[in-house]
Amino acid sequence: MKVTVNGREKELNRGATLKNAVKGEIYHPGSLISVHLSTEELIEETDDFELVTPKGTMVLHLGDTDGAKLWKEIFQSVRGSTVRWSTKDIIAFGSFATDIPSDRTERHYGRYDCFFTLGGFDNQSTYLMIAKKDHDRAYGAGIGNVGRITQGRHVLGFLSEGEGLLDIRPIVSQSSSSNVVITKDPEYPLEDGYYVDTNVIIKLDPGSPASAEQILTVGSKGYLNVTESTGTLMGCSDDLDVRIPDENHMTRDSGSVAVRSAGHGTGHILIYKERRQSSPVHNSAGTVERGMGIVSGASKGDTITIITEPARVMSVGMTQSEGEKFLSGLGIKQKRSGDTSDHAVIVDQIPEMTLNAVSGDEVETLGVSKDKVFRILLDESRSGDVQYLRKVTGLSHKPVGSLKTQFSFPGMPMITFYGDEERSKGLYPQDPFKRCKKGDIGITNQSRPHHGLIGIRLEDSKEYGPTGEEPYGTNIIGKFIDDLSKLGEIEEEETIYIMEGKP
Image (cartoon, rainbow, N blue to C red):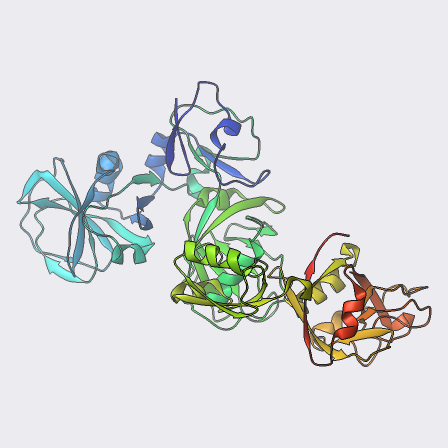
């Protein structure tokens, strides 16, 4: 039997289940899968169709017209049509045969309108056209207007003659949810003609590089946790202690992805199911190109597998030679700095944000000797304090973080590093330690004037912690698991690099 999985047709044996269908697909185990059951019923109910091209996916929203009714009857015959020509006014896909009557009336076409035309006034040479700009013209079709392109409009600028409509499929809507099953069950049985999505594709907005990076960071494991779901939106609030600048703002259509940039919940990721007006505190971060069925059916506590376009560009943590290979595979030139040897560890890249990196042709990678990157082990039971350290060092969004030395002196029993006074206001006191051990990592909590200071203990002590504070002013959050003697060589105002490891 034939089942379409993530836009590609697969031949499966009778009795196959989702376990067979998702093999080889991008899918995080335990996340949601959408199964479209009855295509015929779905076509009757939906007014939105995905037009899949080699350069991306567009969404066609049908109007209440005779052309829209005809589209539902013949769209499968339009599948596979190629771009026959493209001008400043229109792009045309075709041709295919219809029974549309000819008509020489001149009509007005608005930008992104989608409509039928007849080549030479012959319905055996029917074309599907999309308007690139407002204009008036007679295109020969008695039944014309089909609808309007509402998402993926940027794709029109990239299509060339000969490139085609790889697939056309109805989009699951709230009103047609009875035709879609949302499941995590790998043994769910499939039937011929089913359409399966295992992931959600998000096309990132180049006008919002920081907001896009928030999605890339939170989704770096390959999935998003659903922390809320309403009739209007699906949200993920896994990482709210972030600073997002004001970026691109757009009307939040169904499928729009936004990131909150100000106020309570900054960093909140939102995927919209219904249209909402633009907001000055919600940056446009991207658009769902495929997989809205999963978004629509997600509930709080679920996870959804995501793919971003482009994928994240992050070379930090690689060696210089690994970084060169990684970047060249993306068509980006590497510029090495610091320790430029092949085995040096990349501790920083410029630009760091993915959309800034892909918009240029070069990324600078700062390398240091491997023995200058120290390993630490954090206590996850101290989640709030650990989150503080990760934010201050950058470990929250990249594999290698950094600390700037505040106080270091030969023979001292500790070494301290600058923190973040604003972020440290929420560092509530823990149970005081009874003995601070050599290698313990601690932070000064809010009970003391220098809250937020970070330190590493170089000698055991019952009286003082890693930052020199007494027990009640210290929160112990982890251990330094490399050679402590190396820290004796560190000077004040010097930057050290750290990464999380295992004992």
